[in-house]
Length: 124
Ligand code: AMP
Image: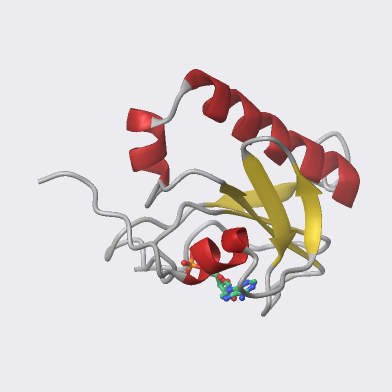
């Protein structure tokens, strides 16, 4: 069974302009906006404009132009927000599927920074 994209998910609505967002960056194939419930001083979500459920979906099926644009958008967000790893750094998180506890089924990379973020995962 393949990937199934739900066009009624909240990020699809943001992309259609049906609900507002606090945009940090927009490129040809990507959009970056602030998380509504920030968990760190910097908490930006970077999403592709295309209908991809998760990072694995995107990595398997996106065009090279989309992949380059999305990757560069993440880099630009780090520079814009001052969280590059030549400074104090940040964390990139992309939850996928049920084990990954993904809430919104449209690929997003969380860019988190502006404070020490602790270890990657809590103890099991
Ligand atoms: P995840 O659990 O990885 O799917 O993360 C979904 C993220 O989307 C959460 O951090 C939410 O706070 C965030 N979120 C949900 N709705 C919105 C919205 N309308 N604008 C910005 N961020 C949102």
